[in-house]
Image (tube, rainbow, N blue to C red):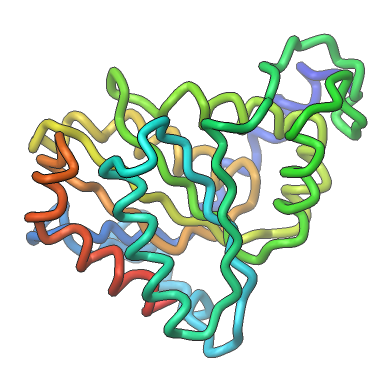
Length: 229
């Protein structure tokens, strides 16, 4: 099946909504939203489990001590206390070429580029939960994160059929939810298309500098999120 045909066929998957939980500091849109709130179906109670998982943390900020990585570290701390196995991958320092759309892979690999995505591909397929960590840049994910997601194309079928769990940790300088809406919808669309079971989202509002983030409630929220997985 060619690229266009696969994308059309995959559109039907968008009708199946994953559980959505917005983990934020206040109520209303910042509270916990489940399937019953979104489309009238019952909440998926199968997300939470006492079993130990392999968790892959995809850090995509060029600032090692930046705000998004701070939330990732707190999430990791909580998840480790729960007994989960954690693997970190620093996307911003990896050698990952952008997808050329050449279709050499035929959506089943191998990609024409033998770079660090080859290693990351195996890590993605071996993990139970993928945690996407990115700052907001111009109302969307970092370019480093987009590189990785675009390269999913070479193994979309294999990855989507594995029904992985996913989570999103993100921060922005702005305190308005409007700053997050495009990334949030993009992430949720990816979850639906790739059959990822969304475990939750943290929207770190007003986290423009590490100091601002450190003094906010979001590091604690990330820790609690990791411990609740």
